[in-house]
Image (cartoon, rainbow, N blue to C red; front, side):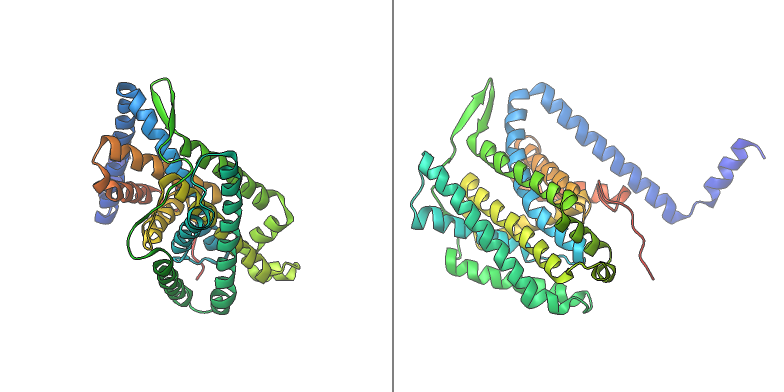
Length: 349
């Protein structure tokens, strides 16, 4: 049989579903290539505006990454999508505002003000971590061997509880706060950089590096990885599974607390429903990078932050940001369902 005949034979055997899948995949590749070319075009034709907007994208990407890590760690260890995590972040933003502005009245960029901000950051991390640990102890632990729908509905219920607390603390509308940094910025040649970008990255990068070290290099990190692989086997090896899972929730909550404080100082607004939108974006970041993969959550967060910023400045505007983000997510999922850094898995039956 000649090569041409074999090619025709293989093509003839292709089912309509396979043909549609190839068309969709090809379209996705084309759209992603067009997006990449458009970004390169803007970088060469409007470099000052491009890099100014790019720094803003890095700031939002860092915040998304911090929240996304909470999602991906909890999913990685007990396969739970903790939908209340975004609202925990919202509570951290409100608590940070109360500490910095209402109670301590620190709104000027002085040395004392920044020291107070560091203290408030630690308080927000401890409070958010404690709330998340309490939620695991009271609600999720009892449902660990229940059908997967039960803890999922519990997470939604906790989300409504957090929102109710947020309404009592913040009010039902948007609340504006005075911050240490405001809109202050400096220039790198023609590029304008907000100081809040530097502060967010200065706090976020060490936290991400510390998380990577803890997970990959410490005894507790080994216990977390063992629990994620097989809880029963981990127990047989002497791992305290309950404490390990509680520790994971504490870490995720602490990162959400840090993101809440940084959001307040860089954006200066809070809303009781902020956690829904930002939590959804952070969860999308985790899925885009590969749910359960720490590096993937960070990559997804920064990618979405940069894409949002570039879209709002150069393409369709703020009203279409979510559409652009989820369109790109769908395109990526079409040809890499496990995410950018995720690994293909098979379901056990």
